[in-house]
Amino acid sequence: MNNIEWGKLPFGYVKTHYNVRCYYRDGKWGEIEVSSDEYINIHIAATCLHYGQEAFEGLKVFTGKDGSLRVFRWDENAKRMISSANGVMMAPPPMELFLEMLEKIVRLNSDFVPPYGTGASLYVRPLLIGTGAQVGVSPAKEYLFMIFVSPVGPYFKEGFKPVKMQIVRDVDRAAPHGTGRFKVGGNYAASLSSVVRAHQEGYGSVLYLDAKEKKYIDEAGPANFFGIKNNTYITPDSTSILQSITNMSLRQLATDMGLQVEVRPVPVEELNTFEETGACGTAAVITPIGEIIDRETGDKYTFGNEPGAVSTKLYQTLQGIQYGDVPDKYGWIHVIG
Ligand SMILES: *Cc1c(COP(=O)(O)O)cnc(C)c1O
Figure 1: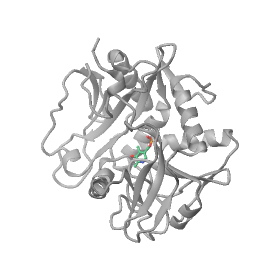
Figure 2: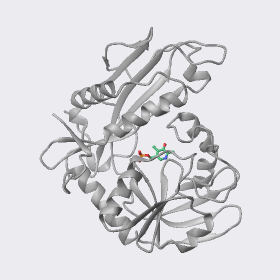
Figure 3: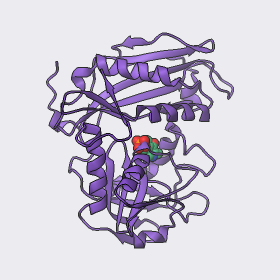
């Protein structure tokens, strides 16, 4: 057992008992290894260190009222990991391997899954890296797929409150035909300078525009963007955004609530017409946006100091499904026995 104060957990790293690892060598995946070491030993010429052969995932496990350990849509994360791996020429971990390692690590660290009612959850971080040595630019022949977990509190300490976002035009996180649609670390490296600057300037996050024309909204740092107006849920269609599983789920829930759903390019000026806006992702589910300032033009779009009714209902429904308080109509939850 451990003596964690679940209600006070930050969204950060907490050491747990074990992590799980699996190496890809000689064209095949090996045995799953269990480790209590937080470090990995890799070759100095490993491709992950030089040429960015790295992809990751993020998903959560929740404790239900009945004590069950509930994973949300792991199959979508496993599929996206395969897509990201293929995107940067890495060996993709098969879905069955992903699930086996996921179940193993959750069982091994089950006392780190926060109890029902604490608002906390177990964050699961699968990671795939090129470990084979290459000096010339080419994909590695060896890969390491691992999963570690960390109990996390709610993403925003202040709770479900609107944040301020900054539109940036002098930095792009991804190009139209680049790696934006893959969950790879390089996209984050590209975003850091603008994200750190936005924090220093008092914003919760950054809103990127399409890199080519700077006309349309792409996404919000590590989260997708959506806007609500006229009983419609609108989210950008773009080749350079990461397809968020939370966004996919919210679109379904919005449809169930009787909203229209539109996935299409969203011009920046359309911000003037939205009744509510938000960012969505696994970490926070929904971050309502209260105000958006365009750093270059000074244009300001305001949505109020309280979360909108639609965003709130979507947020509560999705969280309800995750914790088991709302029926899981679509089989999104996998219970780890
Ligand atoms: C992970 C991520 C998201 C959110 O995706 P979810 O599947 O909802 O967690 C959005 N944008 C980027 C760039 C991401 O890396």
